[in-house]
Length: 119
Image 1: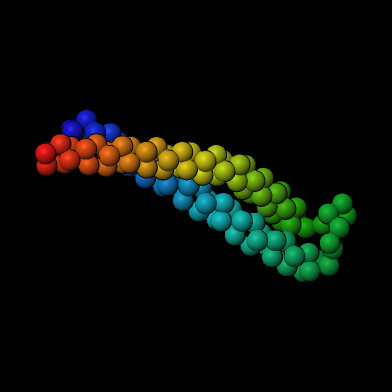
Image 2: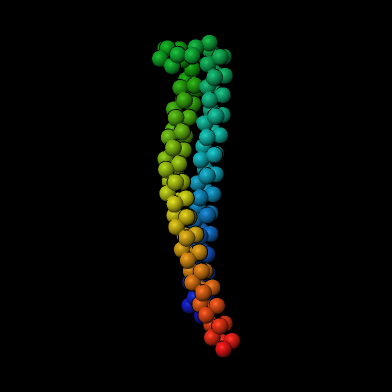
């Protein structure tokens, strides 16, 4: 009985840990996308202020060029994190399946023990 309870606690902990991991990655993706959006607005404002929108132009604003590189890096990082997010969601689904299986087995064993005790 104690080993079953320990196993259930372990599986719940693993599922909770996977859930936290998914939430953390989702938060990071959202933050990176928000920051990239802000950089987009700053780039457009800088281009409007300078009157030059062509990045290959010799007088293109240095800040806009640097912000574009940072924005592209953030978007690349967000894309990488989206791949990790799918893996984390898959791991969460597996952990929840394991937990459900262990809880189902525990319920069956307890029902069996009750029926034996009732006889």
